[in-house]
Image 1: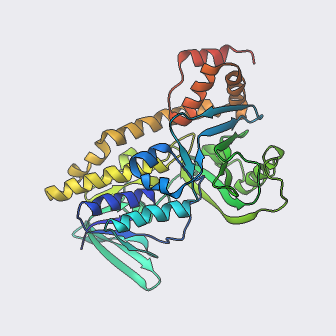
Image 2: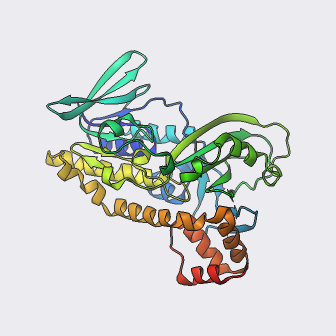
Image 3: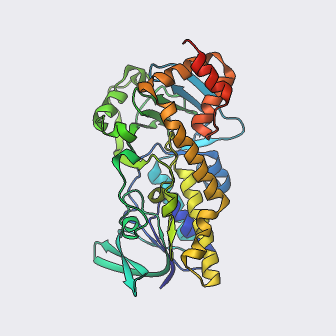
Length: 392
């Protein structure tokens, strides 16, 4: 019998397991495959490093503190972070590091276990069932934390949420390639497209880089992901950075992510909490999910510890997870971003084109554009007035 079962050992699950294990409780950390790499850009923000994982500094990664953003018609604006440094990592390396920290803190890792159902007793969920190479296994625990991503079977079996609709998702494809390139190593590159979506290039080190693109919401139904990926990587504006004819493909994958924010009505029940991607802790517009997922794991862990201390694992006790100020701030932030999606991506890229043209001429307008995309700061009335009254 474990105090807590955490199903899913990505960043959210690993942080949750780490915090609970450090508090002296018995934690089972269930993972389908420690060699699986989540397809994403791999950007790690300064907030993640400074507050949660200062160990990342010891890896001596390339610091990314500049970004170039391009509109659908390739108008460029640039931004530089001051006093904060971000990095880009291969997610296989990152996830294994965070997972190892959880194990070193006392969590017991069970690899090659796919969670697929709950163990019930008197209509109460007392554990989970997994499929492994050696057959079906059962794990019993007082509290169950669901952290196994967008395709989580437990999230559906819990009754806390239904299957995702295609129009609720972002769908992206990316690859990690290796070879000589002309990328600035301290710069990320974002390319908005003439559809609801964008592409990116993030340097990982001197020779490796992450490149990808995707769509979201109704445009998932209008565009073929493989086709727009090939069009993006072969676009002359992209290929100018890559002088070689062939690049070593280290890895390639595609993935869904929440495009609508946190499913706040589906975060907890008696002795159950959902965290990370499984609960929608992914930012609309930007698709950034690492930091909010880690925060969800941290707060769920603190909630579980308090519930165990009070010997009360009921829904009434676990609601403190959703009510925590950090979780409430994330939910509010994501609602704001979601409300800006249609505004930001309107008219098949024409609105972004106009925004970038104005930003190139007006520093305050440019700063508000970056604040809106990167930091969820709502634009001012003056921003909208200038946008709608401009004859560009």
